[in-house]
Amino acid sequence: MIKIRIIDPDGNEYETQTDVGGNLMTVATDNLIPGIDAECGGACSCATCHVYINDPKQLQLLGEKSDVEHMLLDYLDTKRENSRLACQVNLTDKQDGLVVHVAPQT
Ligand code: FES
Image 1 (cartoon, helix red, strand yellow):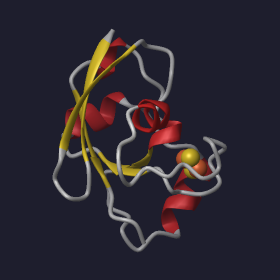
Image 2 (cartoon, rainbow, N blue to C red; image 1 turned 180 degrees about the vertical axis):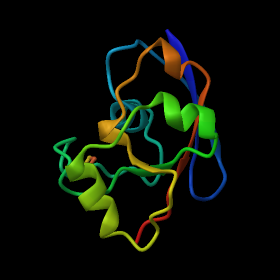
Image 3 (cartoon, rainbow, N blue to C red; image 1 turned 120 degrees about the vertical axis):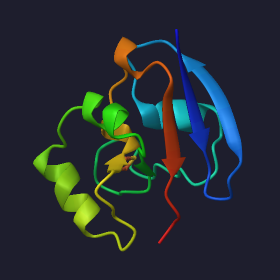
Image 4 (cartoon, protein in one colour; image 1 turned 90 degrees about the horizontal axis):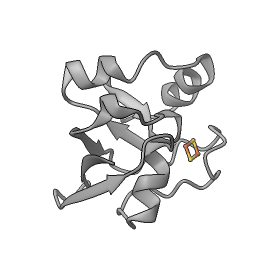
């Protein structure tokens, strides 16, 4: 099990635990985190699972974005350098202690 702290756009914090092998979007939706609508169900086609990873070290551990993830993020006014789509973040032991900020909806 790994622990992930998720902070919604209103600043409410949620401590979650999950097995490795899933993805961040599923953890957020399973825990009913506000702001993660995940309309496409993780198919990387809606961008309604937009999050920020503020810690550069944690962001680096997530690996590179795919071309499709880059393209979807480019459509968002709220995109930042530390943006990720939660459905594209696969969880391994390296993500234990990850802190995630849900981006505001656009
Ligand atoms: S759930 Fe649709 S892009 Fe992530």
